[in-house]
Length: 90
Image (cartoon, rainbow, N blue to C red; front, top):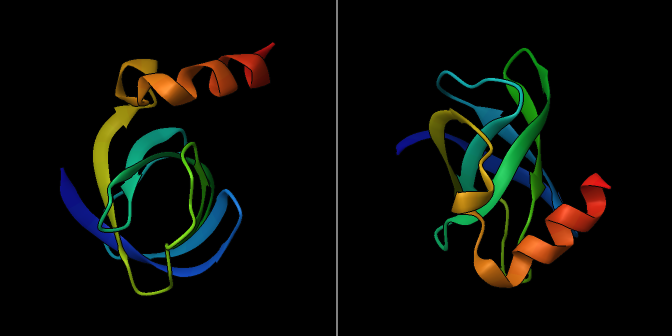
């Protein structure tokens, strides 16, 4: 897990980040100091949009983004949130 950026804006489960390292579309990321599970859903130059799959209350601009270098895997999503993710895929 490496630091690859920081949050610039957050609203509900969506965060915008300034990317400072290498990142890929659909990459598994961890958002904020709490390292919440998320996925890169859009990229443009040094900006990315992240879908966070856990409760985001308490996240704020300036918190770090960590990358995995791997695509999203449900094994990384905490068990209490797996049902929500699977339902969205149907």
